[in-house]
Image 1 (cartoon, rainbow, N blue to C red):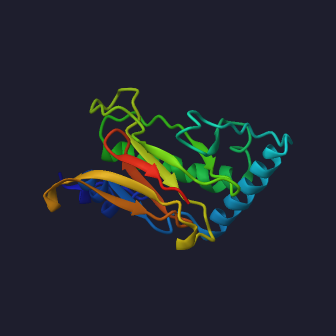
Image 2 (tube, rainbow, N blue to C red; image 1 turned 120 degrees about the vertical axis):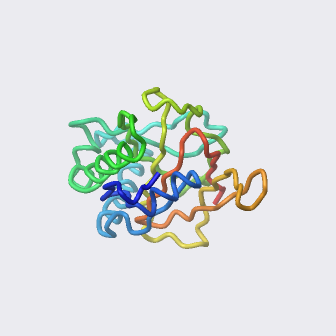
Length: 206
């Protein structure tokens, strides 16, 4: 298919080609640096307050199983924090809605249902999320299975020494091997998209 003919203002044709050809793609600088910094500051303050038993109106939780993952997370709901907070309402959420629209153009028939969450690996714990897929592979565009996972990294001060990369495992026919891996550095402002049912992935320990 000629993807260059598609209008994909948020995803871009180059990233779309990579996603469909390899099962994953990244876009650096997808979110403005000032918005990324605000999200990082906001999340750090809120998770710290939550860890002290303080209630700032954000429903943080510790997703299961804890033997496999160490993140804390909250889901975006209309009219509630954090969706109603300025940086999310004006910058983050509109951008993801635009991205979802592009993905629906790219993957004809997909209904564009969104599940948006904010996740954080607290600084006082080692980051870890064991190898898994985000969905059962299902080629039917209208099925309830997640089709694409999109992650925006909001780590403005990340450096290689911080570690915590996300490792993707994927079929690599070009290399003639059964599978290969690629490590995605969680650089602030970087968007990672991958096919939810096809790509095994894990967060490497920091």
